[in-house]
Image (tube, rainbow, N blue to C red):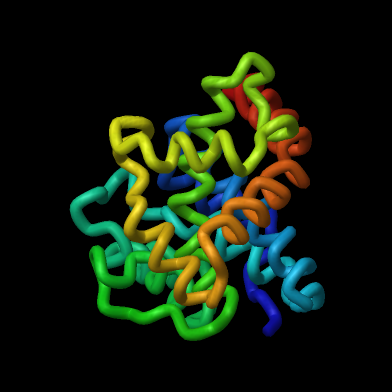
Length: 198
């Protein structure tokens, strides 16, 4: 699975349609998590592809929230993305905004981890450390059960994603915390540089 887009091209494409730091941060976070998962699950040679899918999965969300995952193919094709990447990006909206089912392990991971990274990120911001480095599964589970906390993060999607992968909810949470720990420092630096650019 060779990716056509380089990481630099993918990041430029993301920034072309996304100006909000929050959306760029989310793209970088999901990219970092997907890279960790690729290595963890034995797809190390596909790490770049998994990462770029993560980086671009919400490419259309800022400008076209009503057409999320429907506008993405057009934007991605214009940017030079291959069909495999487009399918993967669109599949993360399965059951919500598209009927494109996640087939490949990578698509299932994206489906499961996308919402969960949002929940973990919100929980991390509430901590004194503002970090995932000292977050434990137990405290995340409490936040997960509190429907008012990060209400925009769909608990059903996270549960369905774990089931799709054949994992328990705890396993998905534990892995995704580790995935986010693996890239937190790098992302913080990248966001600082982003602020300087603007």
